Length: 513
Image (cartoon, rainbow, N blue to C red):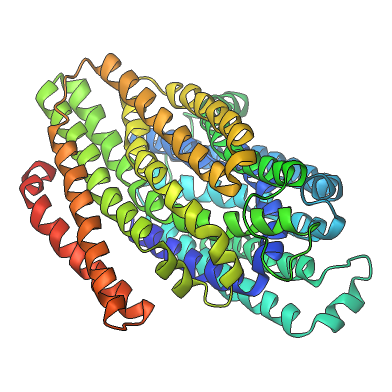
């Protein structure tokens, strides 16, 4: 958990300066690469570590260490092939996907640059799963930190070099017309190098690995291992693909709707009409969605604890423990998400202005959308533990069906709202999407588990969050009347809101224990 949190911080250290260097149009090229990469990566990698860890742990518990090593080798062969196929698919689609999404070939270099990350990600996922199954979490932790560090260092260095030497770089790539496309590709190269670094770490680790031996006569066939791996990993991967479809929907609909219906707001100075759709989408994806995803990445970790807690309570038939574990997970997620959302909503101009000082036009585009996203952020934070608890009660396929429903809401919302509200419509549809997902996930979980929960504590958390926002607004206004800078206003407003929230929420602390 510590390494995952540190990796998220390193991710922010990478993404925020990168956005300042690339700007809105450059981030549209960067986001174009991620939009095709994430579904392919999710299908081939997501769920793989858990599948390998589960099978390895079972073999190790039975003393079948030779079988555990066979699982590792079989998974490496199977999913390296799958990763290679995914990498080739992205490479082949680089030019047509770039032309279709951002309207030029300048995004193709970034798409092609990220393609190798799929195969190296598969290798890393198998190795992490093997060591986790052997009850050794340190390789996963170290590799996550190495991956985050390489991505931030290499990506920012390469992108900075391209922006500092545009003539030299463009001379090497005469087929490109926009230096921002080359800079985005350089930033993406840092992502690919980070996966190479993680795979190299495990290659070195294997040189010193002294795996236990035993159970050589008790081994599954490779066919049986491959079948079980696919059966376990693919449903989780399919669910992750659906989750990533929202990014593709935003890319296609924001750029497409603004191109067809125009932009209802004032276009930033210096941005041409042909560049405007890419500029708006790149700003939204690179700034608003980056800030939006920070808090859910933390509450996502709560699902791991909820899964084991609810599973143990259900297997033992302890309904009171099950109810207590459910409320702990939901209240903890809400207690973290609500003040974060309120604070980001109230202080959106100050937060974005401080994080992205060189991108004032992009910040102006993203301030209102970020506020529309905050309700969805709370719903997403609370949904993550619910998805884990649905798996714990035997409804592993339910999150996939729920996410399909949410994706349909997202698509319909974007098509209806973007022509009316611009990119704020995409933000509002995101909140509607995750609101629907939360309600459907909660209804499904309560129906399957048979629990009857009291939502009064959640109401208290919402009330405390509202008072937190009110205090922050009052202090913000007073600070500006006194001539304070935006940074000073942000600090004092956050302190005031935090103190009020802590005072009001203290009665719920006992419920979180």
